[in-house]
Image 1 (cartoon, rainbow, N blue to C red):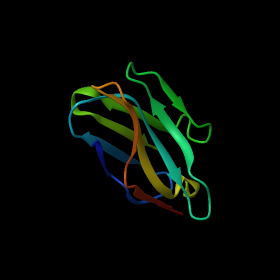
Image 2 (image 1 turned 60 degrees about the horizontal axis):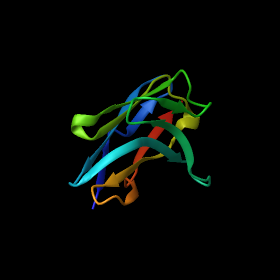
Image 3 (image 1 turned 135 degrees about the horizontal axis):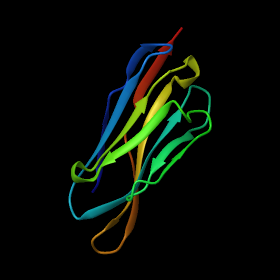
Length: 120
């Protein structure tokens, strides 16, 4: 069982910054891609950013140039540095990982979500 624990959410004023972290715990697996999604009230969950095991990154157009995703493979941790935050970035942010267990089975896991609120 792979468990994801997120941290770093909170309340920040527009133009401010926050850094989210997500750590995968457990054993017997390798993490391939790691990413972040978000869901605002009344909206569907949407993609934010993703990073592969070799460090290739992909971003939603809405966050390009403001958010940076990174990972520490030794710690099984993915980060999301969010700068120049806007009120429309307000959402619950979810960590998502795709990996493989040593037995060969692929898996996808989600974190519990962390609230990010950006005020005017």
